[in-house]
Image (cartoon, rainbow, N blue to C red; front, side, top):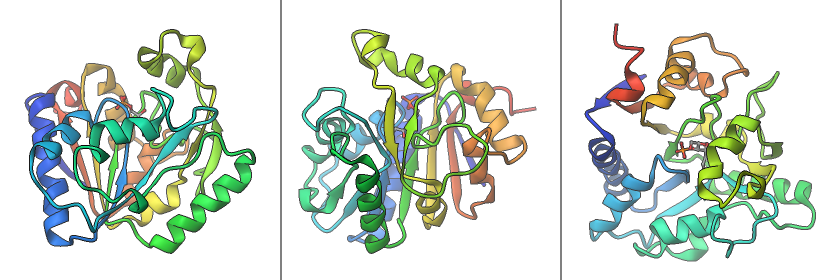
Length: 239
Ligand code: F6R
């Protein structure tokens, strides 16, 4: 695993944007695996500042809340439109995200897996890290879940994400998430982690045992992972 420690969140975001655009320059038709949440916001801002051509690029998002329509202010579909898709020239028909309001969620998971299979390996997967070690919404459990599935969000995740809603009660209890197979099949992975509240989980995920109790620990087995952290998130790993 390659580790890049940045001074602060702004620097981390600039480095992340460089890596993202390097992939785009290497291959205009790259398939990007995209994350939402606060960690990649700065990276998307940096990317949006450059006049780059995304017309041939494709993207698949990690997850979506169950029950939020794509127009809901806190849906990940809307997050992606506001933070990236409306700011660069991604072609909407080349961007994919699970549908949180599908009437049959099992069918929706199978549909999304079909899309992932058809698109082939992700060229660059962007990830954030949950306080409990989740990636996408693959929450701690007894096994590593391979395929797209519906997940009950852990209370730590609901609490952490309550800041985006007007109250904790409004945070959906379930989400659809991509499984770990397409993440682990990605040609390269960039995981962005910032802030002292993540310092402990960074140590457990990347320097502890590989276990489904800490889903991100599986990334230790991937050959092309870059952990991009700021100093605060890396403080317990430096000795
Ligand atoms: C979001 C996602 C989640 C977040 C994680 C960290 O699409 O898949 O795994 O990356 O919850 O969230 P932030 O970046 O808000 O700390």
